[in-house]
Image 1 (cartoon, rainbow, N blue to C red):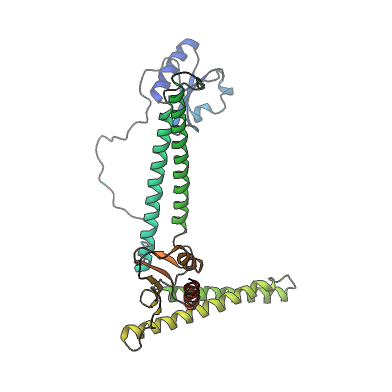
Image 2 (cartoon, rainbow, N blue to C red):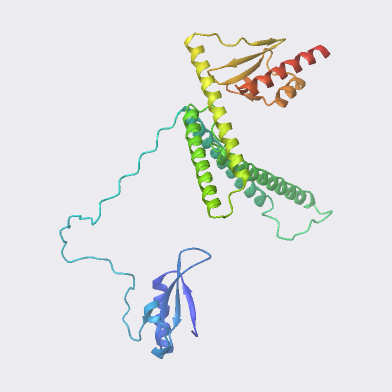
Length: 353
């Protein structure tokens, strides 16, 4: 093609095609193409070869504006029948697919996880808004300074110039920090609910039993494959595949047994059949097992403890919970062992002082 121009609207392209058609006395083609840079579509006006044998499918690929054609809009005509037809009854050739089953309602733990994910995403969005605002401040701080303008040392504008650059740099640094914060918050939100089956989930036992059934079915499939491979004298699965799978199956079974035992103990405590374990009391602190909350609490009577005490508690994995106003850890044998170590360390620290 000897000539080609692009336009955003079809009417502009058609006007230009009419002008080219008169000037060059040649058929003109209008081709609709996608715009890879701005998105949407553009209309390209091109000359069409005069010889029909060399048009290479232009008649089917795009519209040709012939010489002397009237000025009309070439938008696709709307379907406007002269008289409305009665709607024909729908007669599907195949039965409609059944509607998808509704998702089961979330339990309390799953609702908390969903709310936590939503809070993290909201904080990430706020951080992005702050990043954009700081970036705009960075640009506005030096908006009145021409690009490449050096600092005029000794001039009355030197101090103002340096301050503007400093403000711009500070705002840009804050924008970068806010962007990193938003990225970290989005990563945390994406990780919510993907850390395995939590013991806090009231449906943890049924979920673990379902996972155990899947793993046992996979082990049987592995065994059947190895049996068939040995008969055909083919390579079998490596031994570690079955060994690792067997170890995971034993681990899930043990966890189910632990949860069932803890659930039975919790039911007895709630029914009043047995008493809850007594708290461990120290000088200015207490360590309590809350079976209902499934947490071990460490509470300090005098508010925020000294830095040395906080280091001991944090080093053993306990974290501060603002809602409970206590340092907490999961209620299981590992948590009890950590609580016992914290008690011993705090008593030793008290003896040193």
